[in-house]
Image 1 (cartoon, one colour):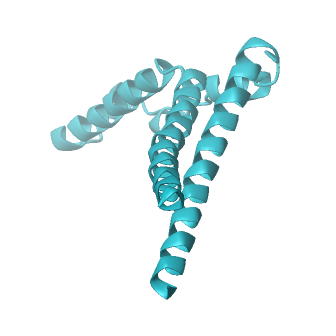
Image 2: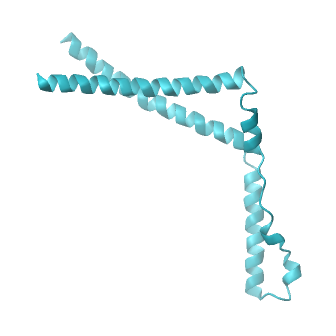
Image 3: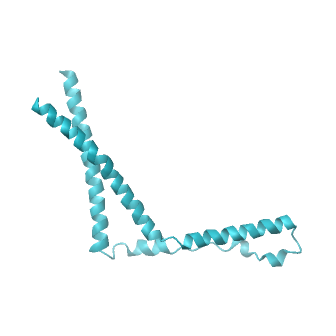
Length: 134
């Protein structure tokens, strides 16, 4: 009798958890859809913030030519490498659509909630119905 009560509590608890995950994921997806279709200005501030990145100043504003007489070949090589790495990183950053990347992260999170919540809910609810039929 006690074992059956614990099993029933377990089934209802995990069924509720699955349902909650499913609801949260679905609500968040609905929110994304409404903002994309109807409330198109709701994300305007976020869109501007994510797509405008103020890069730091080029490493110390160094121009290699100014220091060629003062630095060793190894130091010049390291300085050139540092500037090249900075330029590549800045170019990579500028090529990203940060707003779209953020929305895809949000969609991925929402879908994960649904993917986990739906089977969790369905399995445990099925077990509850099965127990009630017996």
